[in-house]
Each structure stands twice: as C-alpha cells, then as structure tokens.
Image 1 (tube, rainbow, N blue to C red):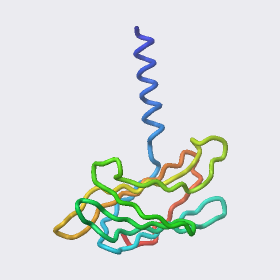
Image 2 (cartoon, rainbow, N blue to C red):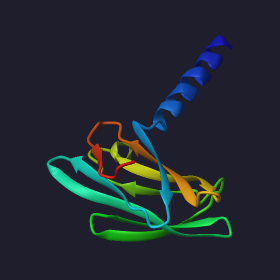
Image 3 (cartoon, rainbow, N blue to C red):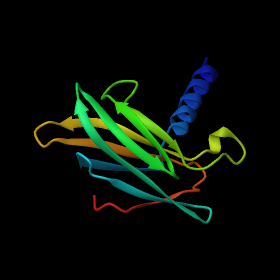
Length: 136
C-alpha cells in the first residue's frame, strides 16, 4: 500500500513538472497597443507581435504574428478558448523538447478599457531567450 501512495506522489510531481513554465510576463493592454517580443534562439532572432482590436460580448479579438505568419484568435476568460499557443522552434529529439509560448487572456477591465494578458514561456531545454521590446 505504501508503494502505491509513493507511486501516486511521484507521478503527480512529474505531471506538475511537465506543465511548468520557465518565464512569465503580464501585460495590461489598451486597444491596438502592440506587444513586441524578440525571440532569440540558435543564432536566430525573430519577432513575435500581438495586440487586441475588439472586445464585444465578453470575447477579445487578438491578432498575432510570428516569423511572417499571422493569426487571429477570439479569446474568452475562463473558457477553452482562453489562450493561444505559438511554437517557437522545431523539436530536437521528441515533441516534449518543443519550446513554445502561450498567451492567456486573464481579464478585461471595462473601466480602463484594458485587457490583462499573460505570456508564458515553456522551454525545458533553455533554447530560447525572450527580450521584451515594449515598455511594459
């Protein structure tokens, strides 16, 4: 019985480690305020941009671009569509090696007309360095 509980404890700790992020940054953005993040890796520098353009019916419309690819997302607080993920490099050995960022819509302040968004970097092998070019 003790072995079973030890197994559960170790399994849950490894699960928590698998979802941990290495770096996080919070932004409070007004409409069309652009976030610029320089992604440095393996001798390359690429730019990640994102901004929101519309908040209606509790939905936030976010535009993003990375490495000449653009995207548009409709995000909701506390919903499955609360975030978007951007892969930064290809895998080295396994899919677990892939570094990526997740941008999460946390809340909207209707009084200030600002959206709180968090950027989380998941990079187990420390292949990425982020430089935040915005003043936030």
